[in-house]
Length: 588
Image (tube, rainbow, N blue to C red; front, side):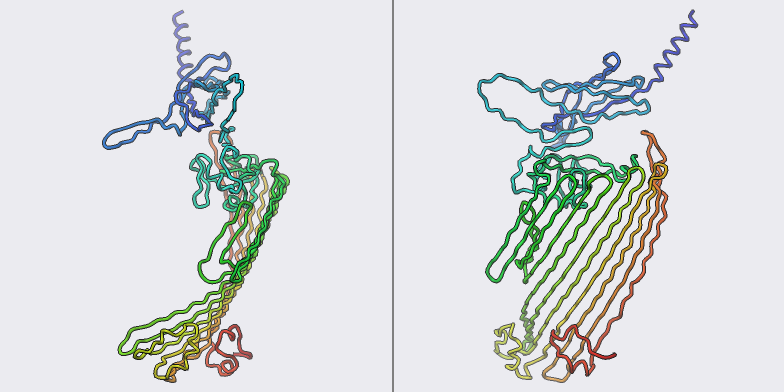
């Protein structure tokens, strides 16, 4: 009898001692104030019979500061009130109940995984209890909830923030709690936002600044912050470690499919003029945006629905012409098309005059210099991408990027140097008329004259086609990526150098021509297979063997040419800037 009892007790002790403890952890906050609820009661019940398995109080973090040798402490309300509970892993289903005085209780069912040592239940939001009163007559005001959690998603209510009618999405994001913008990057709770989406779609192709400044805030309904699965995870239906931390902007229903437009013109004295326009439409499937600007105000402007963005140039006379168009279309999860194109032309004209006096004995050296610069640049950029997908089978995307840049820079430089003898006031001459005053100088006073015009031309072509495809083999993606980048640069430099010493015959006349051309083609191909070798919740990992090929071809350049002392060329052309860009006939 005693032996049997001893055996039973031994089995009981072994059963109890072999049970593993699991820690349930989380935090409790008030979502209206975003403050932790200190001393909130947390209980864990057995789902089978409602018996209490464990209970505790949620605690705020204690912050201790040292000042003048004295320690002071206070509770940090800006952080959540944290709780930890230990229960036995022998229970499979439990119920978590969180309550606090003046707040509605929250009940949450939890499934216990015996293989885990710790289970994080996340953030528990307790809302204040609504009070009911019978009033004869009263004005009721309410505070809108600014933010709340829906599962693992942080949701901001745009209507709860004070936004003016003419303010952009950037102004709204800057008001969100625990959110800041630094150097074009959005941070939420200290973590960088990798993509700014609209109804789950990347309408602006990763250009967060353009989205923040172009969209008005008053049409926004809510903003969601969450971890979004990457394209490989969506394609395979498994976690391929390509999640992105995103902010997803949702528009109010009444503004979906609405056209937003703006047009204005400017006229001023001194022959100043300008005009700009903006057109935009967005819904759940597509976005179209067009903007244009033409002005000679020394400004580079971009019109958006809520105002203008301006870059100013302080010197010279600048003329700017620019037009942009963007289109994005994603009707379903199978097809996606995105494109953009821009054309920009900049013109700049600058005049400068300089007087220089060098004090020497017995005479001072005077130099007068006049420079005129004319700069013009035209840039065209076009991009298009088409993606087709069949989930859990394959995905393919074709991209093409084209850039053309044409630059022309002409400079006309004139220099006159002479001796200032005695009390002659050569410095009082008008600087822009120095060549008209050469006859007023004697050969003994004149040192030299320099005529030095320069013309530089550059054309750049860039073609960049790219093809990506992913095939699902054994539940894992087999990826093929092919990129071709062709770049062509043509440089032409013309320079005339005419130096005349009036008192001697030591003159220097030369013409210089520099032609430099480069052709570069780069081919880059990669094949990889992302094999997920762990398939349970406790361990996870992906092995990616790959083969890469890279080949660069080209880099053909022509040398530097100095064409001088060629009698036929020198006699046929003058030395002013009008002769630049012209080469002599015949073979040299």
